[in-house]
Image (cartoon, rainbow, N blue to C red; front, side, top):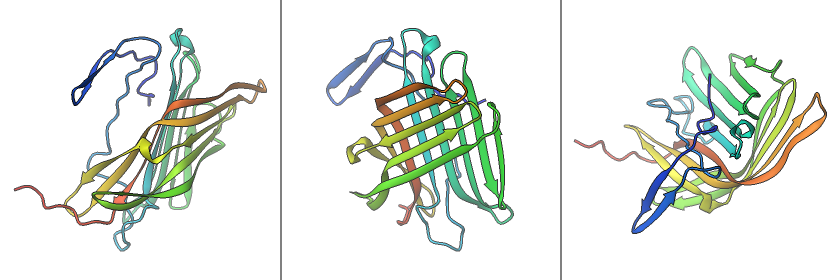
Length: 234
């Protein structure tokens, strides 16, 4: 079972940035969030090809806290396109965990390999799991130039629900998280505080459950960056 990392998870504490300190009080406006990276394996192109932003991962997160935690909503989704090995070739893998409230929980997964699709869904048949990327822009920093999509539209459809998460980011939403390996560098562009239009429709009841814009969406776009990795420490 996946979980959305922040669903109904209260948090309190303090954050210090330079000389400025921020106090976080436990309440209906704050939630804890945590995840981990892929470890030693990052999405990459086949060995005979140059690194390409085509072989990337995406990460999508939205949470709407509530005074009544049974009414809290959270969704998290991940996608990755990567060369696996000589036997499996290219794999396109996606997963999503949806918690519409304390009782409604939908999980879905899909893997494409060898021109075959394997899918699972806790709400009937998985009908759509699409990601559209657009509004590409160049980012320049100390590592050089990189290209990322400022807009990512995630569309999910199961037997009972139709959901879209439309992430509309700006350059200042992002930090570049760098994972240096012995022969390459993987760059993960993480956007926080992203304006996100959320639409959730209950198909069977023919009812719109949510149609709202939140300012706390999170998303990522990561790929192998074609630069020379710094030498490993001795």
